[in-house]
Image (tube, rainbow, N blue to C red; front, side, top):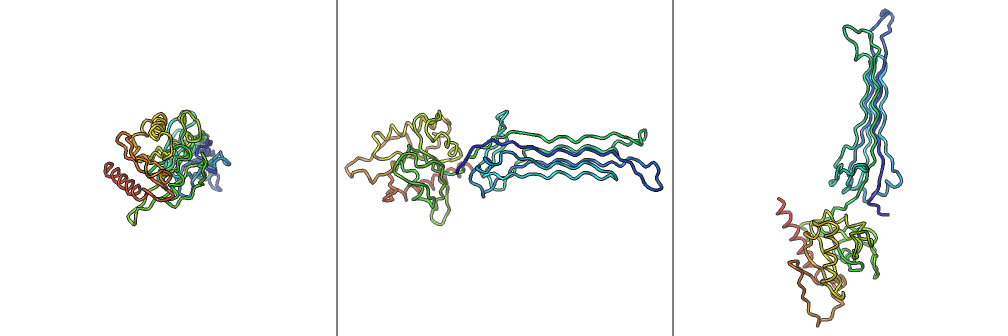
Length: 329
């Protein structure tokens, strides 16, 4: 099961309290204070790992607690610090505070760590309070309690190219043809119920990642259909492809509907549309005039069944991604 949105509660470890103690040795009747400090409670950290692809595990374990510290002891023995807790999350996880809605961090690289909560500070033992005027202090400090926080975890896939289209536009078939991804494919709407990632090889030079999300219907930005839940997975993609099947009654109308849905969800997304793909071109007769005008966006006729247009599409995407990298550097 693919899960990309969960809420969890975390708590850092309590600090240990300081100790009240005095030296009591055979030839030292009234020794000075020797109460040790309490240890520091355990921190909670998040770490991005490539070994996870979903937030499913958090559905079954919604609470995380770091270790509590030990209290101080006599003979100036400090309490042991609480064990830190590292919580593994998939690469691309966004962490937010539920109460405030504030962004805490965005884990986009394998091995990246994020400190979420510090453990409670340990209290001082009475040895810390000794002075020239108070040689037998009985003062001590209680350890601080750990902090609690409710978090919202949101997974956003990291892909170079995002595929956007109506249900049954051929996105899953396309990604299965240009990469090694094996999504579920069938000739009916909403075959795709979760996003899929595929790695596309460009000769022996390099590769790029393509994301296929469930089909977008009109009103998706308000929550209609399945696509709204997954639009977050193309937010990181620098290149977007809009797919409309060739037998559509009005290719341009479908394109503009998808354009508007992206715009209403995030006004930055339409700026990333790099091409219109007119899919299932093998179903068109040769007499059909193949000409469209979509602003300055180029278009490709592609067929995943016959591979028409796929080599040119891969070449176009590779060049487009290289241009983006050059612009960013």
